[in-house]
Length: 342
Image 1 (spheres, one colour):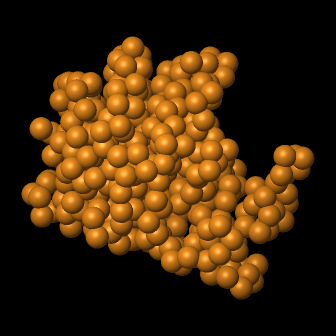
Image 2 (spheres, one colour):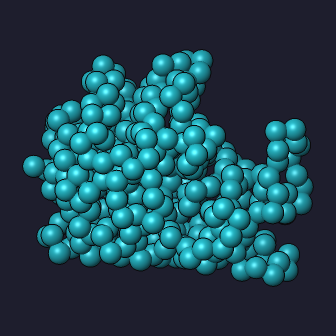
């Protein structure tokens, strides 16, 4: 399988991670991509460099104000004399705070959803590189378009928690949304299947009022799990998008066999939509040994999951999202790709 990769992912190297009110060792670090690429190299996969697609694909998804924020905030933060090297919010606009702020502190809160997406001096460059990986993988599939066309984008940082105008959950640019929108320049119907342990709330939000992109997410039940406020079964889309969003919350600690039963529900809906291209938001954090501790998929289970998805027989772009057990990432991605190709 063709693997798209950019070493510029390492320019984003967070030093801060705040979870449940306390500081933790950052999970979304360059070592993630290094572990994935090492496993793929050893398995003999072909690596392709990402191309530079310029600003237009990003601007087709994200708002101008948000893109300006991401590109410039690190420099402006330092110029303002802030003590912390990384940009972090200390306030967010609540449900009753509708005004746009003019000060830098308010701006950071306005454009972020949580404390999980610190912005460093070169985070923008790393995020742009990640979106270009997704776009390059997409064009590999669009140039083929046979039923078994497939490519894998080793994207880092991930993207599915990023909204049109907000970063959060380790995500800055929504790679899979950017890639899906790019695909719509050549095809009419696109589906996104998110198998990350966390609901793809940013992706859902971006396409929630649209019917040309069918968004499906299988994830640990968010009733007491990130992102908490989205990913519930009653969220079906709005306006033109009513019925074009499907959430399949799964009980915590669910293992391989039961997970595959939930996946059949998603596949039935995907077949009914009949997409021209399928995008898979591939989170390996559903792994039984992942530190974010949601589901209990085994290494073998990722291969079974992939084999099941491949039965849809649709041109497919695989976009890397989460996965934080670096000791097992290489084996898990190799298992998935082997299952898909098999």
